[in-house]
Length: 348
Image (cartoon, rainbow, N blue to C red; front, side, top):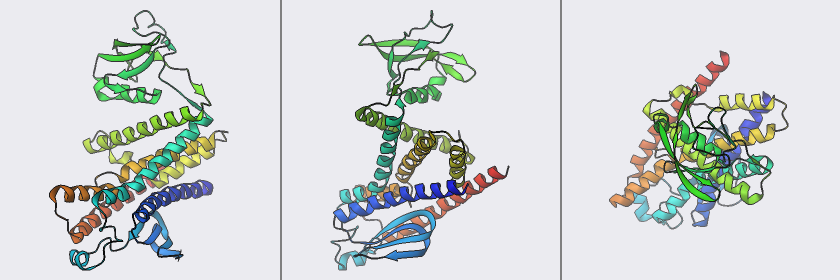
């Protein structure tokens, strides 16, 4: 368990560090003075200052931040001070790039991880290997069909296919428009859905995989994997908002440690790949979550920026600060609730 705790903290620390590094590097490229780069929150453990920026490590391994010069200054300060090297002195499109840089780095990190996993294992295109026993005579599909679209949704991988088939719209339908490539030609099929214990299915078998693909193929499928995770996160958030999924379904660091420990204890030669896959999912989740239009997150600051751009009026920093503080508190309460739920689950 100690190993699992250490590796989880290290992995999450790297994700946070790269996230904040993305903000800082882009800000410095735009000439912004960065006063502090911090990993962690709370009391400072140690710090050093090789130049104009203080680099610090803090006690609580929960997030981090980049403090830019006069980032939250008031309106009078903005009028009287030299704003040439401040975040607020940047043009709106530059501020947008700075704000989005952290989440972008997290998503790119996940993409790289998926590429490594694909190169070391396999990729699975959505090509029909065979028709499920008993359905050969009535199926509109043939072995070798490559599924290109379900309705109007493009299908790139087997994962895309399973996600689309699990959707409520599909599960409530009787037939589907499916575009396939057969013998080099595109065909549009009207395929029936068959009810099973696990929901409605097309009754197809997908077994062909491409082992140890080349780098280009690995990267291409890594892009598909990353988009799949982004869509899955958005779908899960939608389910939480609409009540289709309870808040109790959320997992926090304690649950992550438990999953890491389960993976590490299997003794499988693929343990490191399984862990890499888990952390790839987490870093993409982190990137998407930070882009949500919620105050206290990067997406919330982007929302404020868009409001200012549309209205032509600057939102007072004091107002932004209060709103951010309220939502930060709410996020901390949610994090505490999830963590307590994880601990109670372990005790059961």
